[in-house]
Length: 435
Image 1 (tube, rainbow, N blue to C red):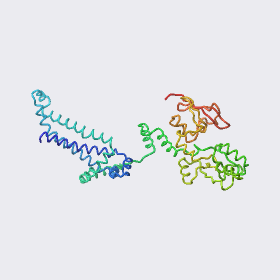
Image 2 (image 1 turned 60 degrees about the horizontal axis):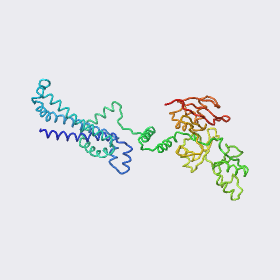
Image 3 (image 1 turned 45 degrees about the horizontal axis):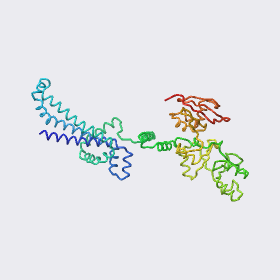
């Protein structure tokens, strides 16, 4: 074999090896979600890639057979065709001392091996695989059909090796089925990576994180608590009702029997009631034209469950009861959506106000999830036992909190500034250590 023929043969083998090795890494690295999107857009070959990822045994076998066969053949060609020419060069008078040290034939074989191996590593393995990592899905789609053809051609060989490998894995009790189960942690990691790379804007990252948080947060974390519920007795004086509706900012008011929240019979909307008043009509709260049926929900529901309940019932307002059938609060669709929008929504009174660079004023009824996010704390101890920062203080102090009580945790000092009866109104949170 002439030198030119040998060089051409080696480059053909390099091209074959490059295609096979790039297809190997591309099909392994191609993201399942991206391939599913391409398949929905009409790229049929994406379905072939997905099918090959689910059952990669035959593909891996044909890849290994081809790569090893090409490498062996290249070594044979390099040894038989390149070594004689290198040996002739080494026999030059200026290099005659090499004969006594190692021998021309041995040195020519070593140099031939190094040259062929180096070329193969660079052009047949390293560069194709790095390229395949950067463009996994496009390369996998383009090469899946040729690889399917090779699998068909080498079917007998594949059957032998694949069958032997499957038998050994079965004896060892090892599963070779690829699993791509996507967890919430995976999604969070993708979101964080997207935010760091600038693909996701800060607002988009914030919204998506809040949506996932809805599954974890219970309805009691955002409800209007019992003490702030404005309600009327069914026999309340007409003038008192009008005055209260004008004074209070709420749009919906509960109607109860005997001034007892546990005997709630429904609710009225201020707009409908006041509209009838303006029409000079004498209105009773029990009038079926304005009294609406109340939706009762348990306090164990998550915000996502509440949203689904609102959707299925067509309601946007619900009364929350605990396991003892006591009314503990009310919630509206606006309350739920405020969690999704979070800091993107401007409200008149913020529950957390940053006073200085390292201190915050926090309302006692602020949900503990909002405190954790604002302060950047990884977590608070035993957070399943409380839902608000007031509950955290009560749990940590092991008593009813009073003014000036404080605790220190995770580099922050939580100090109570104001209480009212048994309720914590406001806390001062101060950062005590630098990260």
